[in-house]
Image 1 (spheres, rainbow, N blue to C red):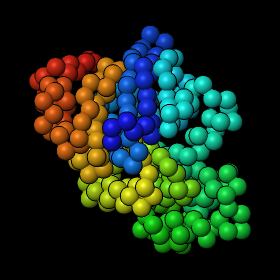
Image 2: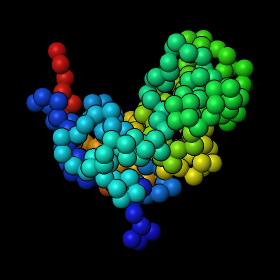
Image 3: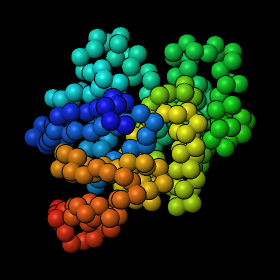
Image 4: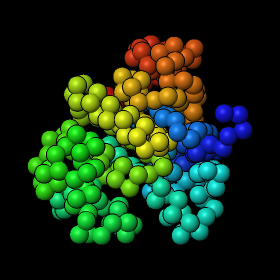
Length: 258
C-alpha cells in the first residue's frame, strides 16, 4: 500500500565482531501482515540481523523502527514494551530444560503477568492444541520430546502471547522433509490466525517458498535483492539465482579450507 508505514523498517544497520564485518548497511522493510523470508548462506548474518532487532545484540550503526518508532533511541522501558510485541522461534528450540513444557509455553505470559500461574497450565494446553499437540504433552520435560515436537513447543511458546510480530530462525533445521513441511504449514496457519507480521530466516528454499509472501537475500552484509517470494527461483539476479538453484559456479565464491 502506497504511503503505508512498514511494521519493521531497518536502515543502514551495521555490525562487526572485531575485524569481521557481518552487517554492512542493511536496509529492509517488512509491511504489516506480510511474511518476509530472508535467505542467505551460512554465516552471512541472518541470525545477527534478527538478534539486533530483538535487542540480543547491539548494532554499531543504523536504525530499527517498529511502526515508525526507532527502537535504538527509546529508553529501556519503551524498548522492553516494544519488544514484548515480538514472538520468537529459535533455531534449536531453545527450550528451558529445567521446567516442564507447559511452563515453557506460558513463559512470556507469566513474565508479563498476563496470566496467573494457576491458569497458566490450562492456557498452555490450549496453545499446544494450536500446534497439533495434546495438552498432556505439557507435563513432559523438553528432553522427552522428539525434534519435531520440540519445534512445535517452540512455536507454541512464540505464539502464546499473541504477538504482533513473529520471528523464525531456520525453522526447519534438523527436521526431515515431511516434518519440515508440517512445521511450515503450522507457521503459516498460526501467522494467519494471529494476523501477525512475520520474518523468517532460512537457507531452505522449499521452506522459503511455503512461508514467505516476500523475500530478500542477504549477501556480503547487505540486502542485494528483494521481491515476491514466488520469484526466488526466477529473480533475474545472478547471485540469488546461483544460491536458490544451488549452482557451484557463479558469482558467489566459496572459501575452501584445507
